[in-house]
Length: 373
Image (cartoon, rainbow, N blue to C red; front, side, top):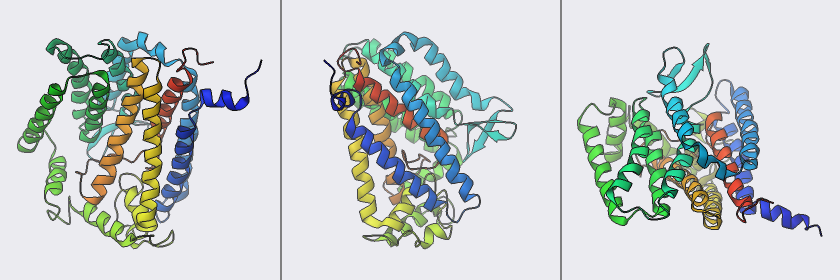
């Protein structure tokens, strides 16, 4: 007896995830178009964003068709690939520097992609395989040391770029996965203490670049260097404040349309949204993000094994931190780290990575009963 089409769809597609992602893609495309409206090469930028979505959808389908459990056997090669991806921009002749970080691949003057983006997904898979070995209980210090080594290696490589923002994403991904993976509470306390020590060392030694220190100091004192490191934050606050309850409209917004907001189509796209759509638009976006994160949590809880639950938890942690950090930095409650907003900010590498992550979630969901059929 053939199963109804609706049943087949429900088995393979998480409706909440699909609806939230499609809505975010539509909203994000609109925001990129609005943010770049007065920029040189507006049409080319919008076209590139759509290309990124198209390529990302191909990756989504491809990853969805692969049984996620097959990744377990490739932990070693994936770790090597992860290291190569992160190191590759440092190779003379192919690395490109932007915003102080050498994190892009460029060949013949053509910028290809940002290797640290797909590296996030590899990191999630690797950490899921490592943490799953402990069957939900990580307590003894040798076990903690093993997991910590898998976290520390890519983090240190990323700091060499230097790209503090992406490094923090890796740390927060691992924290979320370890919470699901059974790390005892006292070790989270130890991790928090270590992070605090590293932050102090970074601010008082040459460990961090000058521009990175300036960003952190502006977070502590928002009035510091208003024409330099504090300029972005000041303009962002003005834009969001000007939006009020319903915004200035798509043809309004002096801060965004008159080019006062730097990086308004990437890191500060939420500032454009806040100015042109106001509090109402911001709440709509947060509602879509809540639906996305709820879907990831649902898929993690329904996974047939700990490995799948950990992958979903890693993706949830990645998106949650990037959302909180990006929106937080535009309103001054988080330090400026150059982290883009998922499914909203301009950037092909970022978009493809996020959509491939959705494919991973769908792979876990469609195989939650064991066969995926």
